[in-house]
Image 1 (tube, protein in one colour):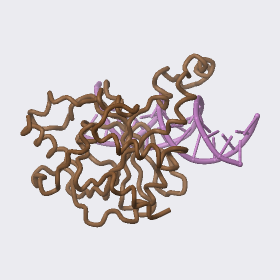
Image 2: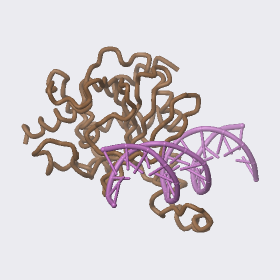
Image 3: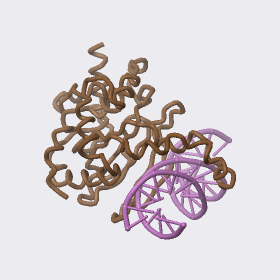
Image 4: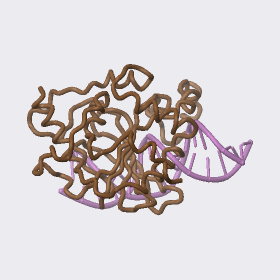
Length: 250
DNA sequence: CGTATTTGACCCGCGC
DNA sequence: GCGCGGGTCAAATACG
């Protein structure tokens, strides 16, 4: 269960920006260092980001569910809670996913975006529940799961699914208008262009080839052993820093 | 009163 | 086929 060190080099949040992953996944190679972070921009003053891991949906589990809508009409009718046709079964879509660990007292980290909690489930073999959040922006379907590590209860594991199609709402002036490169990202997930792709490719083949959720958990467990030591970085700092650096570069 | 959260019910995929 | 676990819905409730 432990010692999968070969995966540790894929992402290290001490140097890469969460914001890069959220908004500019095609630019994952662009790193910003903690030393470049503005000390005064902290919203998450007590958060320690430990690791970031790109997660690719299990391709084998996708195929069967991609043509689901008409066949489920009977179920929809007798289903007390009417499900909107496109709301569910998004599993068929190859939503880009990545996750990271954060050492924090609070479960829900403020990453600059606005999230609405839409569910919570007990996690098997864990006393801590898993929370499900969705981006509140109507046109944005990004979701994230938040759960606490079993090995180290001070570590929060956050898994993002999808890419924001809008600017960060909690941003300083000037950020609005800088658009993410979502189309590039979507294509890449399907095996498209270059630029950081290797990370995803490596993971999809080596870690998530059979059961995505299970493999994902296994990876987290193995990662925990070497995490959360002294990698002090602030999530919002990173976001803010990234935004500022973008402004400068622009 | 509008918005966010809670929570029980339900669906679906998967393993046995 | 059945049961389990993950994920989602939406009514009820809480909150500012």
